[in-house]
Every structure is written in structure tokens, then in C-alpha cells.
Image (tube, rainbow, N blue to C red; front, side, top):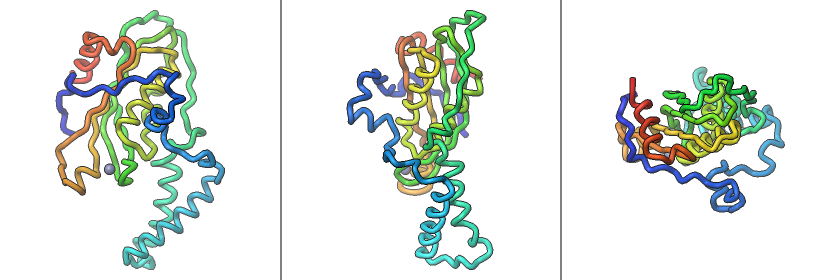
Length: 230
Ligand SMILES: [Zn+2]
């Protein structure tokens, strides 16, 4: 992926106070829209049903499903949807976290950068992929560094819009670490822009979430400088 300077021009998504979460409009923009009965059906049944429907889609497109190469595709796609690329819809797959005391009394910014992720655009069901950069100030607790990566993957494995993915990661890090100081920057390629529609293969999309100390211009700059450093 081409590296480009990430500048302060990224328009930050305004952090939302928890009190605002009761508001329907805000809620629908931050939470993935799911039906209340979303996980009543067992995964195995979901795979079976999606397989049937995907078989129909391929059939309608005129593909010969007796062909050896195509025969297994409906099942492969269904299994991939439920068990892999959309597994982050199911709360049972949310990463478990263990908090550790911040024994070293480290009170500076911690940055986990260049976290590669693969997601899917919820408008076209084609890949969004890119890098996420996550930073926070500890409130006395820390988590294993790989957990930050796992949270990114969890929220990426849903049909997404990049803005929501960014806020969901930021909010989750705040919640898990009991901190108000979180920065998230995502730089991504959208296949729905690159491979269809306007067909622009070079454009990338930047989104950011800054809360607490990260709304301070100096702190923000320190974070962005580190992301841009090799
Ligand atoms: Zn799209």
C-alpha cells in the first residue's frame, strides 16, 4: 500500500458522550444496525441458508454449478461470511480482556500503529482494507498490546462504513481501559470505489476519532507524527 502523510486535515469524528447513546439517531450511526433476534439462529443453520441463496444468485447469473470449480462456491462463501469475514457481528466473538496494573507508571501516550485490517463495505459487500492506528493514555490499567489489534479485527469483521468502524474501535478502547483519552486514525482503500463506480484505484479514505487529551493540538500532532514516522 502506498504510504502517504497523514495530516491534521483529517476531519475528526466528534466523540459522543455516553449519555447521548440513548438517542436513536446517534445510536444508529455508532452501533451496527442489528435485529434483536440476530443470533437466535445457530451458525450452522445460517451457513445452510446463505449457501442456498448464494447458489441461487450464481444460478441466476447463468453460471453452471455442475462445474467442478464452481460447485463448492456457495458453501465456501456462506461459511466465510458466518465464520470469518462477518464473525465480528456476533458478541460471542468479542475479544476477552484482562486488565493489568500500569506497574511502570507509564503516563505517556501508547501507540499501536499499522494494524492491518480487512473489512467489507456495507453498501456493496466488497472489501475495505487498510491500516488502523490506535493510541491511548492509561488511566492506571493496561491491556496486552495484541488485544488492541484484536479489537480492530473484531469490529472490522462486520459489514461496515469506515466512520462507524473508527468510532466503534475508539469507544471500545475507552470502555475496556476506563480511559477518556483515545485516538484512532484509519487509512483505507475501498474496493467499491477502486474496482467499480468511478474506478479510482488511487484514492484513499482517512477517518479519525479523538477524545480527551487527543483533542489537544499538540497531543494530536505527536500521535500523527509517530504514525507518519518509519
Ligand atoms: Zn461501498
